[in-house]
Length: 264
Image (spheres, rainbow, N blue to C red):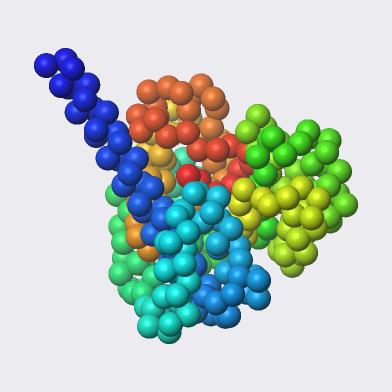
């Protein structure tokens, strides 16, 4: 029975992982399709599509999936998606920004509002927390691309605004307007990035601890599980102790390179 239970546990975890990956691919496909539909279906001639394809490749999305998503957008028969943004507060007064692509604004707004209220938060009006964030470009490279000094030098020469490094990645931040230019310069000096995207980066941080951490993790998971949601950003600051404690029952460890970086 022990062996059977262990097998079932492994299968459950694998099933959960597969489901998460499937949802990720779905969100990446949607972005590719919208990008292809909004401009030329050629990544070399469409900056938004080029970024979407690069991010899909970084997540090991199969080439066939990428090609299908592009053809769907280029064919003109794809669903029409609206870009939406919702703002609100989570447990402990944490500020959150939710970005999405939806074919039904009413459904999306109702679902997001319900998710906030069911998980210790409340959705606010547009602009209620955006002023607490900066709109920036984010370019991520794996640590193996070079030392902190090498990446910092390349970032300065490319015109980036900030660099933060840890054991796994180098994260480079750029101005919103100069994002494409800086990304191209970095690709010339460091090679293709792991991911490139426009993000919301918090100007400051809101510390939370104890039970609020677990509640926040549930809220973030619920938001990211929504099919209409593409990205979630927050200004939370959580200690390593609280991240590893029972206050985080979901076992979810958000990246803490800087408050406001995309969760997930």
